[in-house]
Length: 115
Image (cartoon, rainbow, N blue to C red; front, side):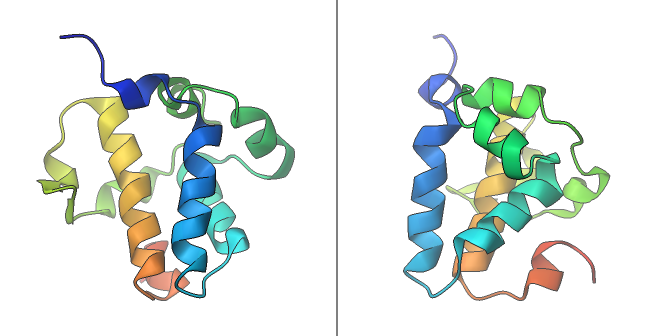
């Protein structure tokens, strides 16, 4: 069966889609970058360099996966993120879920699990 196609896509292919999604809802690229930094530790130059990485490497090479990311729960693409067993796919869906929350107008403090 092989690995999912999304694993081979570069993060740079997905990143502008996240930005476009949130900008349609009057949110910003800066907020997307804040979410990515919170989840992975990538920021500024390290994020720019990471855009070329395949999705699987983007998460594998992340500087600091946030230990609170397990607080991200809910359904994305019809699947509960907390039940995804495959590690890379779970990380991808964590990010998808955070971007969805941003696009739905959730406050940044809630998105970043700062209670």
